[in-house]
Image (cartoon, rainbow, N blue to C red; front, side, top):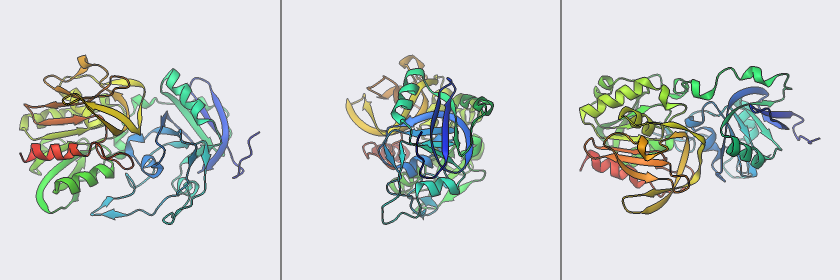
Length: 370
């Protein structure tokens, strides 16, 4: 029997019938979600607050998680500099070992953070065995429990991840403005944007940023007289997002430069007649390679997605191939010369992660102001 330092048992149930026992930490709670994993070795404050993880139980493969604790939130012009959103977004967290913090700027432990936000955690389990099962069988639903015994975990699996529009929980309800040195505006269609992406847009391009809700119409977007529009990252199944797809189509007709990132890339692909499909287990980490096919350069980039363009035949009409993933051939980016569009599946910024692809924002700036 596993000794639990907090005296709390925990469980992870997978929809294939697997039941894993470990130690609970964080909040005493039961949550359902899609079980996914990241191979990142650091950056758990950023990962746990990334809105793209909404509705998912995150398994971190690195063996020690919590070493440097959790800092106090810091913000500049309303943009967080050390978290990706204002709260923890994951449904639950699974780690091999939850550790105590040792760092000068730690405000609380990982356990205390999850407890304060009502999120259950599970430790003292073989995370790599869980990942091998997910990689073999594909992404599956699961139930995580901290401090509660399961009677029938299947009763918590009412809806599948693919059936829920999670942008309803991550998109702002009102317009948010981040004023900058230029009064000219970039509109972000915000389906759950990471603050790291906001920070890069703000500092690299210098325009005032106006964030509008994910399902804002094109006419409402254009009321802000944008010099460019960004369709952000976010959670869930892009094939459910009918309104953003229609907004994208209409903005193309307006001729405004567009940058699509992650979910925004998928929305743009669908809007222009392409096809987005579910991946077997997705890409989630800060160490994923992408190759720019225009010059055969390879970059290391940050990813968080379970849907993608899986084949060149699924590319949007008139688009040109830009990036591919050398590991599995997934299409990682395209561009459209006629419509002034750049579209990437990966995240060009890095919090945490490599800085290889931040130049994508500069390329977007040149589309706006040649």
